[in-house]
Length: 326
Image (cartoon, rainbow, N blue to C red):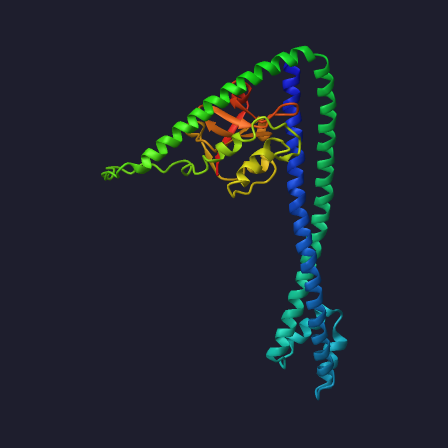
């Protein structure tokens, strides 16, 4: 069983690495789309500005000061040189200056967009390779897990029966706790307000803002027993970050489908200050769940398991990384 537990942790990290690559790939594709459109627009603007510049160069050449026009046109070794020579001409009007500025601006933008797209395409290739490697790792480890489970089917069936009974008890305790909290909240809302004297000293600011998403616990409980599906983010099946993302979407909070990325959201909160609804992270950010109070959290653990309630003890205590409050 220890070998399976270790493999499950490794498998979950591979799944979340795959999810993170998908998040990064979506950002890259969005940036590529925006910058490709912007590059087309910049090229059109540059062509228009260069047309205006060409007309002005012809105008200089055909003006009365032919020698000055020839000096600009024939003495220039490049477009940049011509721009510089025109800029040095004392006869430039405000309109000439505007045209020169536009040509320079749009040429720089075209060059910038082209460099960005080259970099983004290179990054896309790298992230796709990372995602493919993560997927291959997941599929390989799933095969190993299947072989291991096949060798201890009897023991697995016994442990599953024990776990089902334990989950039923944990669910009953959590439902009772939530009901008690709801009654206390209603009574507090009906109680008369009593003026409180201001404190004599200023208290230090809290580490995290007050918890405002305790209601997600009730939502999360609706999906107890839902099977773990790697890459899943719907009631048909969840992985750990897909479960958190889906539950929080029900209260209007958008999160990425990646435990690594989710750790960048909200505010850090100490373990001693955990409140229902806080996100708790484990195993080098390779796993995430939702704290429900009483030292427990709800999560989609790993392949072969279901959405369940677990205690912040044992393996989860030893691999605990931190928590975030949204």
